[in-house]
Each structure stands twice: as C-alpha cells, then as structure tokens.
Image (cartoon, rainbow, N blue to C red):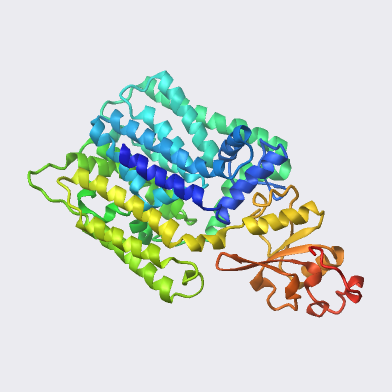
Length: 532
C-alpha cells in the first residue's frame, strides 16, 4: 500500500504543479465557473450558452469544493486524483470479493496506478477516471457472493452516478459484463437476483432521467433537443463524419498498457477460471465495441484498464516462487531510457515547440539515469519486481512530465491572457474571440462574468466588429491575423500551444487591411491606446 500511496502522491503533485490545459480542462472548469457565478447549478452553460455535451456530476463536485473552500484552482485539480484513489479502493474490494488474498489483491490497484495513461489521466480534469470509479462502485456489489437487495440499491446508485458522470457511455462496459454473468459467475443466479439486477439498472437510469428531464425543461427547447436527442443521434452522425479507422487504437496499446506490456511475467493467462473469464470479457468486449465506433479517443478506454490490472494481479498471484530466483525488468527500463535520450536530443537540437526552450536537458538526463537504476535492480520474485517497476515507472512519469517537459507546459498556461481579459472586462470594454469554435478557454482564468463575442475569422466579420465596437478588443491566434497590417506596439503577445496568441485593440488593425468601405470615423483621428 505504501507503493500505491507514493504513486498517488506523485500524481497529486503533478496535478497541482501545472495549470489547466486547453482546450479540455479549461473548458470544463470554465463551465463549472459559469454555472457557479450565474447560479445555474442544474443546467450547464459555456460562454453564455447552454452546454449539453456532458452531464453535471464533475461540475457539481467542483461546486462542492468551492462551497467549502471558496473559488480556487487547486480544488478542481484534486478531483481527478481523488476519483482515481476511489477507483483504486473499489478495485481492491472487487479483487477481495473474488477470493484473492489481501497481499495478492493489493497488486491490482498497484498495477492500475502504474499504467502510463491511467497515471496521466488521474491528474487531469476529465470525466473518464470519474466514470471508471463510479463503474467500479456499481460492479463491486455485483461480483460478491450474495447480491442482496441492499447491494442492488448500492449498485444502482453507483450506476446513476456513472451516468451523471458521462452519460450512457458506461453501458459500453457494463452491459457486456451483465449479459455474460452466466459465464463468469461461479454460482448461478436465481430469478430473484435477476430482478434485483433489473432494479439496479432502473435506479441508475432513473437518477440520470431525474436530472436530464428537469434540466431539459429548465434549459429551453434548443437545450432539450441537444440533450435528449443531439447526444445520441447527432453525436453519432458527427462521429461518422470524423471517423477514425477500425485499427486506430492498436498502435496506442503500448502506451495504454505501459509498462506491463513490456514485462512478460505480467502477461495475462488464458481464462480457465470463472473470475478470469470476467476479466477478459470486461477488457476485450468494450475494446471491440470501441473499435467499431468511428469516433475514437484514447481516454475512452479508461474503464477497460481495471480489468487489465486484475489480469496482471491474477498472473502475479499465480506465479510460483522459486528459490534463488533473480528477476529483472530490463525492457521497460530500456523504453524509459530511450524516452530520456530522445528528450535530451530534442532539448539540444530540436526546433519550435520541441526545442531547447521547451525541454529540459537535465530532466532528460535524470530520466536516463533513472532507467539505468531500474535496469540494474534485481528482485527475488515477480511480485516484488512488479512493485519495484511500479515505483520506477511512477517516478519516470513524474520526471518526464514535470522536469523534462516542465518548460513546455508554460505554453499551455492561459492565466496571463485570462488576467488581461479580466482587466478589460472590469473596464467595460467589449472583447471578441476571432476564429470560431471558442471553448471558453479564458473564462475561468480571467474569472470573466460576461461571454466573449465570437467571430468566424472572416475579413467581413472583423470589419463589422471594428465598425460596431471601435473601442473593442480582439483575442486571436497570431496566424489568423499575421497577414493584416497591425500596429504591433498595441498587441499583447503570449506563447500559446504550438504558436502565439495575440490580444489587441481592434483599432490597432490599420484601415488599409480592410476593404475601403470598412473605415470608421475614428480612423481619421488619433486615438489613445485603451490600456495606456
């Protein structure tokens, strides 16, 4: 358990040491902020409009912390690690209920926390770790020997929370497990147990419906249509329009399962026991379904990883202990060394976003030295080696993300432009975002209480905005205005992702950049810079 605690504390430190990353994390914390300052706790909003893309559980958890501690940055950053910790506890409980000894069962959360993608997403403000924690809560009563009425109620409540975390996506993992109960449960289920299982499903669906129907009524017709219809049919259509190939997940499996895929003693056994069949069904069936769904993201696969962790635990628990055995973990350590060598090369000879300004050479060297240390380690059995490899991997992830890549994250920090926008709002100056598709990136960073206007990056839209709001300001990617004649002395430049963000008064765009008809009367007179 000390190893798990160390890995979790490293994740907490990583989460607290960086800013929210655009566009996902900044969007979600900004939605929570807008719900908070407008007191719209039932209907999510983003940049002044209703937001139907996600259910509200994550936003409610953010509000719960803000109600206690005030509006802070650190509380939303802790939700991911806390959800991960809850998932680890639920996974340990599932392993114990399936009959594994305490020592063996502790290897399941250890294996999960050491996985690269689970570790990274545990420190992110996203929905998938929270969804997985709630899913594990729903499964824990189901795998116990006696599925009583009380356990059915508990399972249903957890299912409802999972649905409120990310909607019906939970059924991609849950339904195959439920449908295959006769194949993996050692004792057959009677009619009463099936009725209790149906009750659990009804409770979960009822919890989601109690929010969704009332939110649809409060949010208006358009929001109701987006929430109740657009989240199914329209999302499927959009997914098909942006399809990824069937095999898209396959090249990502080494990242998803690192370091265990590179260490043979943790490769899963063939399913000979009922509980092993459960793990395989839990892992393989959702993966196949996600492969057939055209819209793909690597974090969609998070609910599968606990099943892989259970398979790894099962393999380690069944490994015989031979006297005078020397166990090494050389292939994972070699992969860590390669990452450090590549990082060192890029920090010295790279260009742009992966050049010397954004990567630390000393961090890369530290990663290589850590890999050498893991390479040289010797253990007496597979379980001890797994614990050592988990510690080494967790430290390697921390060194790579917080030291080697530490300078890189400054390009994703939107606090400085957000503060400038907050100052502009306090001066009652109009602000527009140029480029379309604004995802509320700066709303929380600037504690903005008014939505930004949005422009579609067309010259006509810029012209109209300049005429209608001669004292207005513009937020834009530099690449979108680099062809225009602009008074550079009035522009605030910020490093942003792979490029540059500009915030400037629209009056700084010279009249000759537009059509001759787009000339405001103020163009004929000198104007004082609004920020002077």
